[in-house]
Image (tube, rainbow, N blue to C red; front, side):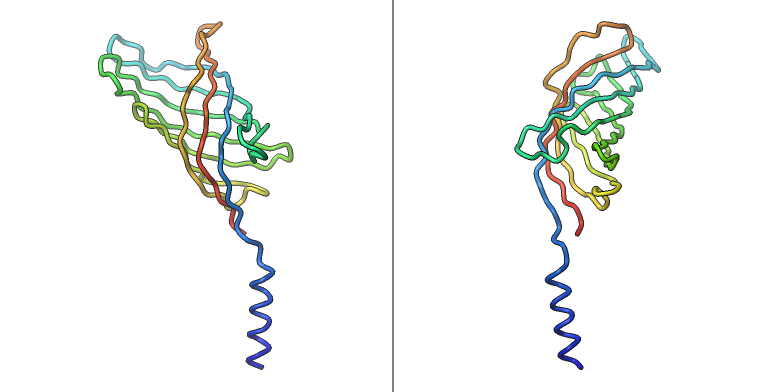
Length: 159
C-alpha cells in the first residue's frame, strides 16, 4: 500500500501545472482628467482618472492590447525640486474580460508598481517593476492630460 501511495503522489506531481513567469515591457498611451484639490504658489495636489491601451514591446507580451483604467493622487511641492509624490491603482482588462489590478507609487523619479490581484486567467498573479513617463503632450483642453508610460518588470502566475 505504501508503494501505491508513493506512485500516485509522484504521478500527481508530474501532472501539476508549472508556474508561469515572464517579463513585462509595454507602453500605455492614455488620456485623463484632473481634479485639483490645491493649487497655490507652493503646492499642487490633484486627483486623476485615466484610460489607456497597452502596446507590447517584446514578442508575445501578455499585456499587449489590454485596456487600462487608473486612478491616482499626486502632490507636487513646487519650490522643492524632486519632492513630487503620488500613488494609485490601475486595472488592466484583456479581450476576455479577465484582468489584473496593480498599485503604483512614485517619489521624485523613483517609480514602481506591483500586482495586487487578478481574475480569470490572471488569478494568483504576482510581480512588480518600474515605469517611466517618456512622452507627455500639451493638453488640448483644460483639466485633461495625455501621456505614454513605459512599464517594465516581471510577473508570475501560480500553477
